[in-house]
Length: 73
Image 1: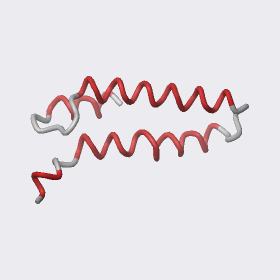
Image 2 (image 1 turned 90 degrees about the horizontal axis):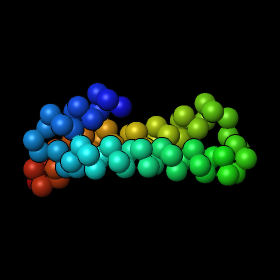
Image 3 (image 1 turned 30 degrees about the vertical axis):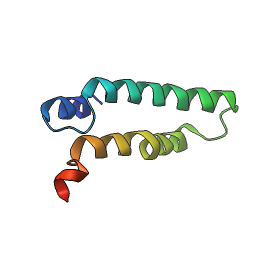
C-alpha cells in the first residue's frame, strides 16, 4: 500500500488526492473486515483476500495509475 500511495503523491495529475485515497483505503479495508466478522466469517481468509483485491485494491490502483478520462478524450 505504501508504494501505491507514493504513486499517488508523485503524480501531479492524480484523479484523487493521496490523503483521500489513503482514508478511503483504510475505511474500506476496516469495513470489509467488520462485515466478515459480523457475518461469522463465511469465507476463508484466502477468499477474503481475493475479495479485498477486487473490491478495494484494484479500483484504487486504477485511480492511481490511469490518467483522467478527460485527458484521454
